[in-house]
Length: 249
Ligand SMILES: [Zn+2]
Image 1: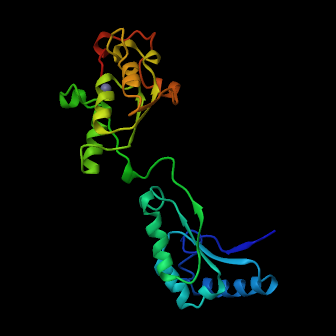
Image 2: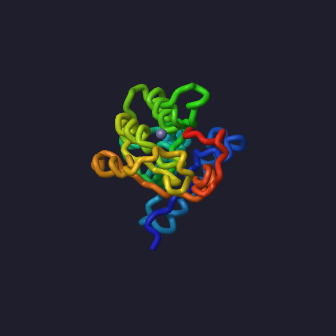
Image 3: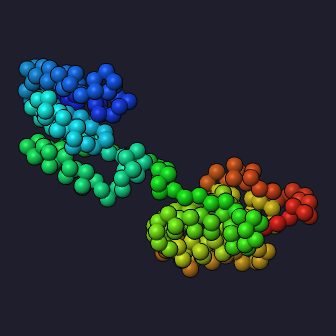
């Protein structure tokens, strides 16, 4: 049984409605009025849903009101994809709903599509590559460079709750630096057994095992993600690495 009908999906999304053809959305408004009336004539019990607009835009709602189209809908719907498409933080959802409620206090606001990208927008990502040789800096591992970039981008030393992604299991220095930086999750590809021994401090005790135990309440460690693909980036355990190429950087 159909309980509600949405009149066009994301009508203010410029890839879903052509503003060159209809710059004022007046053709759209005319269609909404005709469709809304037709739906009501056939079955007045069906809820007519205007939108869902994407982006969430109170000015576009005002424009619809100006065209007389709001009366043809029973509900105003919004779509929101914080962080990724919309570039606003997830905590802004109540504000976004309030912006629409402020311009249509007489109708319910429905959220008919939601999502968060599994990989954040550039605004919430920072990257780093190893710069030890270039900077004559033994601490400039890719993870440390990334934490520095993250701190600068965030405007403070700690980047609380962030996730650090690394192609190779981080060394002890980088793992501890992550804890100091407030990182709550480390996801890495290849483990130390997947690559040549020169990449890791040759000790019988794994710093990662120690951290996994001592900081289990603060830091989640996830290893082996695309491990083979990541290991391809490094010399492998059996490789005969020339002396001049042997470096832990
Ligand atoms: Zn490191």
